[in-house]
Image (cartoon, rainbow, N blue to C red):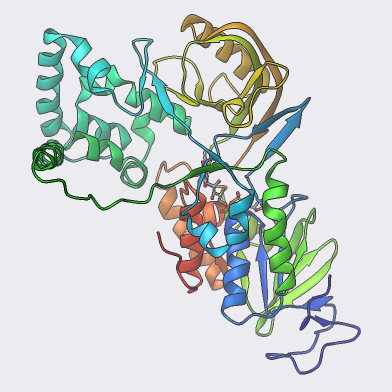
Amino acid sequence: MTAEGTRERDGAVPGVAHDRGVPPGVTKVYDGIVLGAGISGLVSASVLLEKGARTVLVIDEYERVGGNHLDFSIDGYTFDVGSLIFQDDSPLVHRFPELLPRYVPVEPTWSRLNPQGKVTDYPFSMKDDLVAAGPAAWASMAASLVASRFRYRNQRNARDFTRFWVGTKAAERTGLEHYIERFCGLPSEVIDLDFARARMMWIADNARVWPRVTRAARGLRKRLARRGPEVEAPTQRRTQQLVRPREGFDALYRPLVERLESEGVEFLLSTPSTAIERADESLVVRTSAGDFSSPMLVSTVPTHRALALVGVDSEPLPTVTIISLLCSFAGRRGFDTSILYNFSHDGSWKRLTMHSDFYGPVREREYFCVEVVGSGSVRTVAEAEKSFREHTQANGLFHGDLRIEGGHVLENVYPVFTGGSAARAADQVALLHDHGVTSLGKQGGFDYQPTARVSTRNAEKKLGGTVSPK
Ligand SMILES: Cc1cc2nc3c(=O)[nH]c(=O)nc-3n(C[C@H](O)[C@H](O)[C@H](O)COP(=O)(O)OP(=O)(O)OC[C@H]3O[C@@H](n4cnc5c(N)ncnc54)[C@H](O)[C@@H]3O)c2cc1C
């Protein structure tokens, strides 16, 4: 489509604000260009409109919008790459309310396989991780905690952080250290402290004794108060958990794309960019489908890719590659939650999500996605499958007919903070800024973004738009 206000080489639209004409060799001029049509790119396009842009071009290599929100349909089963759960109070829904009726409301439940081979509470179980250990282990864990608080008070990495907060023995017994390794594909002692502080503060929150005591005291006070005259407690609205519609992410994001298109955004998909060049006050993005110019360029693609486009060689930053095993199953499960984490000492898989708990079984078979971080001896779908089968069999997780329906390898899933990569990322973002490119998002900002909620607010803040409520 050609949005109103777009200046084309043949037939420029007159009377457009900021009209600079079409420079030679440029196919079209836009008020803003966004590289990447993931959540960060879509929100960026919306913020640019909000800030007065009348024409915005969004360019992506993928043939569809949504970035790493990927789904696969195989023989009636419908899989996500990963565990993608959304919320009805998300800033993404606040910005794009047309998404809400398309989601499927669900009641997900979480558990974890602990190193003792027991399926128990996620992320901690007081009963199974501590009480069940017995008096000798309690004494040893308590002594280890005291020693660790001294030994690791000057923390240097994620291992020190975990040990400081829960003690070396409890970190081992709960499987926390192994989970971190499985999460990043690297030993926890080479994961930077920045990452631990950004992503693992829940460990510290769970380990702080005083807030637990005050919470318990508050609970007790409330219970005692309820024995007196009945007082109506204020009802707090519960967040509704959601998954994408059964038909896939395309069906979810279609109305959002239509709305953005009606407001002046054009999408150029399946189109890699080949170069970014300066031309006076503007930047020209060269692609196989034409050359597009704008005074405002937002990039949400990996920083080394954007730097290559401006002609600067740089080292790619470390990111996680996820191998997804797309499985179906008939038989008896050894767990009853929809999401199961692997905190045990072995097995390369990280998490599995039972999509059939949300969408219903197909031909009486359940189906689910297993996430495996590609590292060490597990780099292919076949290697991931072998390791998953062996481990789940040893732990009695699937009794019956387990089939692998497909597999997918996805790179650049999330950043790994190791060897000062966050500082290198900041330098790369600053370099792009010097070239006139605003780089943001999970890949463009090397930003660990666990939810679309975080991606939305970060893009809004970075571009100076209205920031959606948390
Ligand atoms: C493990 C994990 C689990 C998650 N689970 C959830 C969840 O349960 N719920 C939730 O709300 N969020 C979840 N998220 C977060 C969600 O995935 C992020 O909001 C989102 O991925 C961030 O989007 P993005 O646009 O920054 O990056 P991406 O989704 O990676 O999009 C970047 C886009 O840039 C494109 N691109 C790359 N190179 C180029 C190029 N040279 N030219 C043009 N385009 C290019 C890519 O094709 C892609 O479309 C999860 C994230 C991770 C890592």
